[in-house]
Length: 135
Image (cartoon, rainbow, N blue to C red; front, side, top):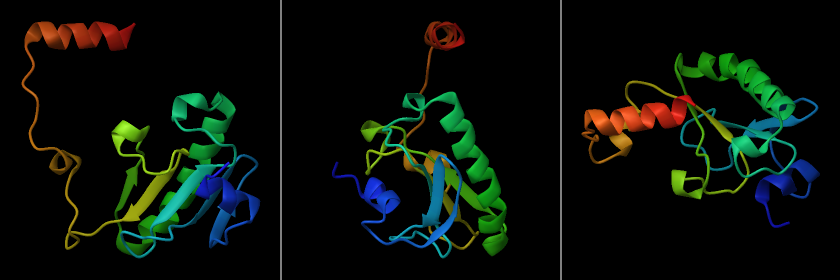
């Protein structure tokens, strides 16, 4: 497999490993957006969160929970980001959670700044979405 994260897990590519559990591992991002940018990934290759088992998900987010206080200690605020699939902006097709220290002086904005505009939905469209997602 030609997955950079799988190569980090196997030890073929060196990384600054911070912590690991049975199913997950965290390390410093090689191309950080801010000082202290951390990635948390499952050890098994999965492209999307819903492809992981419930146990793997629990383990991954337990490690996220453990690491976020450490990352948050850098600036006092942390962006937690997951791009779930290529169309969502995922660049490496292996589940990964970004923990990015944030500050009021950085160049990043709120999630709404990632999009050109907000949607204007009719009540019928809202009801359709509600029923689709609720059931």
